[in-house]
Length: 120
Length: 446
Image 1: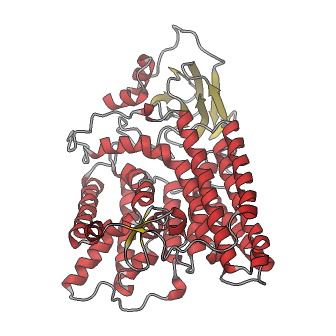
Image 2 (image 1 turned 60 degrees about the vertical axis):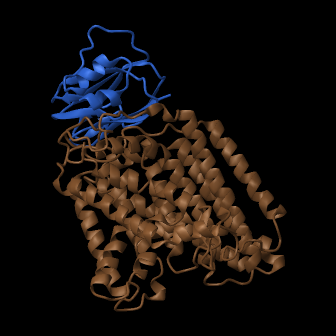
Image 3 (image 1 turned 45 degrees about the vertical axis):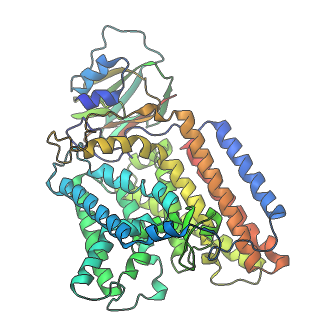
């Protein structure tokens, strides 16, 4: 756990920390979000929209939602943020993109890539 | 590749390294491409007309005391023991450690060993043959049986050349880039058990010469090591020499083209497989994930090899009517291009995931031990900014190209009649430009 937090970076630790410990972050008390919310749906193993790249600026507040028809888990690699997916439910992940690089957002069980996050 | 993060106690589906490099800025790719084109065409027009490279004799001999130390049995034995000890340490983690993301084995295999071998070989030459634990085990076995380690049951067939190494490297690349569950400990344990068993058996049959030609990791380290400033000359002396001179000593043997094309093609596939268009194709379900990956990996190697063979045969046609051995006579000149690709693709992985692996190695059984005192160190991502990484990538690819072009030019003026040398090297030059621009495109777009 300690290592996970270290890896996740030092800025804006709260949502990442909570997400990394298995609880989806709560996004009702919205801080300012930079750019549109990224929405992904998984149905019958297919991802809509098909995987592509989403580019954000370093330091941006990023929000994405995942709707799934099966139980799984979504993971943002590199930032090591995990959130559970429930059938029919929508999971929201919010974090600050404080580390530059290219990061895959993937489901854990099926290993399906949802999109790639490009932080410049 | 995605390596599971240390804090994760479960296991992820695949891959290594949570962070991947940003695509290089377009201006960098463009500048790289311009330098490549200008250098290439100037090289043909301006470079020497009589061969200047003579790797077998070139170089500045090191002072005698240094020669003595480098050749000393004590140093050789120490390196072998180091290789055995490190392998034993990792084997303990592989056999007794839990199969969780904090197990250091995947990081050791894919980052410290496989990627780390490249800078070590670039600096010191063929290091893996000095520490290869299988070579040491074979040597010990030969001592016990009172036979000479070089002595096998059969002589190593000349026609086999580097082919077993090419196949072995391709198998490892498939494991790294395609195989399901390739970052799990049982899969790696199985791969390396089979690898060790096969190589020890082959060494029993062919003697220790097998490792020189048949062991993919040794061949890889030795090929990369030809670019090292430290080399051993034909007269047995250790010398400091230019990378171009070292390259000139790459053996012209069967399978050398295949080996170089495996390194190029698999590294290119690693870049390509990251592109969203490839991901969409794989996830469209036309082929299964493994079939699609296998198809892509083999396709990349085949494409690089086919392009090479066509260019080499055309060169033959345009010079002295074609020689069957021509492709392998120029294989050495593709080595630096392949190394450029490798450095560009894996530099940041070694820098960042290497730190993480050193941290995990301190607790090999994932029970809270801290053998080296590094268990609590985080990964310092500030060691290289995205801009620095992009510069390293472009410089690696462009330098590999320049060294490749010059070494091919020298070989052309040595082999071809004077008047046909320029014409004869044009297809190979175009091929190298193609390889390098492909490399830059992958860095920019994939």
